[in-house]
Length: 361
Image (cartoon, rainbow, N blue to C red; front, side, top):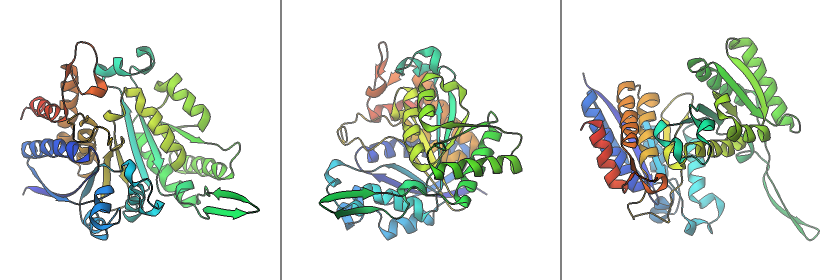
């Protein structure tokens, strides 16, 4: 019996529809090859949803996501929405989607493709062989903590946010990190700021307790976030799995993404205890190049590969997509963000065609 999976597609804004179209063609090709079916349900989210309904995450979109086997999101946001109240902006829709699906673990792999070593701003001897994974807690911390707001008193305006974690929130993300470290190189570095933050001290205490009780075979280390930021550009090969909180993970994962030479190359997955996962490239909507056929679709294609592997357990199909990306890069084809002397420049659609050829379709 042929397996069938329901995928909710969220093309979103900016370059989102362009890179979604490329990823969908590749998914169709690889699903045919491996004998399973994908049924798509395209829904509005972000600015496109605001334009259509006045809200960044319509109830119908969230319901469609909950009813699917996996969710593939491209990108959201544009400067013209920045003047809206915060709760009505595209980014608030993304936070609501994560909360609505119970997605507490964000996985951001950074693996250097040999063909792109020269694209990084760091020396080749620093980044060759880098293969790390950032595991970021996604639904707690300062982005969700209360109280928060702005107050006026004595002629001054004061704004405040609360960084807060409960033990169970730390325990569940720690287990995700330790599990993944056990499947990889067996090393986990927990990043915090325990020397000055009480919430980070609790984080460190709980990570150590989970390690001692459940994962003694994994090598655990701790690092303050400021040092981790420095070490990522000084000696990134020292890292296998980096475990950290929402705010720190947001910053460190974007820093780590530039080891590859372009934020346009990296996928991510957001997972919960049950239900569908959310898979998305970590770059933004790039409204300055939207509709110009300049977008790099590879992070979207690699996000689709993560969806196949992690969300749908289709390992062989995922590996095919990843090989197609590597083969295309090794052949010297590049979008503008990765362009180098001696390489062949391609637009978004032409890159999609080349990826299909590399796939053998």
